[in-house]
Image (cartoon, rainbow, N blue to C red; front, side, top):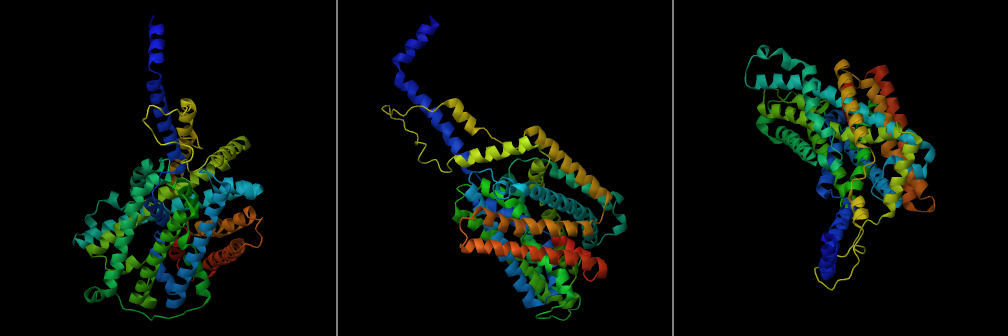
Length: 505
């Protein structure tokens, strides 16, 4: 009787049932459309890219000017920013040709250079892993100095500082605990709030440089100024060259930004690239030029260390460095984990990743022509969409299973923590890893991948530019490795000056 009554009620109200079914189906499919289109805002994408670009390397820029001179240093910043922007643009064009929202170096390289895809991801993983260790080491070394600076600023005896607060191991442990929830986030866009905070820290550091550059009272408290050269070319210039080249490295996060950006048409993607590179270049120019003009040849390898340590204004600047550095750590864990997934996966798993990317590429990015807006009219006769199929489209089809995701994240956190405790100087190793890894993903890979994917356009200007960028990358690789060798043999340039920028990205 109950079944009969239910069937009779459904027959008596077919329009109502159809409308409710269609409403549910359209809402589900609309949600699937949003998922496939991405949900990251343009501001979020710019912030994450900019935070990846600007790190503690900005503090080393004035020291680099000492070996290049004013004009040559400015030229190198602009030129290296343009080459980095070209590499990012080529990557996004490769992703657009492949299609879909599951692009990575692995999926693109598998179509362009299948034999090298595994090795490319290995280079990215090693580079990001090494940089994440350097961030922990830097913060562990800086935190005791920050505590001492605050005691001096408040005219307190530094001998009253508890021993625990001067132990770098304690601070590394405290910071890694702070970072745990951030590193387990699935999407790069979820880190946007920490990127906003980091950019505020950058802004504060720029304010410090501006203040001590234009305030007469502030300039009176600075050490004596050395000579300022317009152009300086020597063997030291070769040693310092990687500082400028790698200052704009953020290619490891370009594809996640492309995948997650809402309505990732070429114009919006180019806006994200131009804004992030432009912001980074502007910061480098301001800090580099004004810092060098303030101290001349007497400038050190860390511009903040040149300002009075007893100033509370400067003390908060040192805190800003900690914020800027530590919140860059999750931005390295994200691409490191994604690359390690490909490196340690079996062939069947890597094929599954490629199949998922290919399936995603078949789905249209814009659903306006496929999904009707919701209509409440009773005469609408649009057939309802299969609810189970639509729900399957909505479900988050993450490439890395949850269990593996957690295991890999825990492994990266624990091993980087242990290494940072045991080693307090990785400058030599990270210098070589950064030289090879950063050059590969910033210049060589974008150029080679674009030239391979667009082989059907041999006379294209952009393809010729891609070949030129790959050649530039090969040149940079040789120069960067030579710079590290010179550093080892002659020790002409302070190690900290190179490491803070070569390994920052």
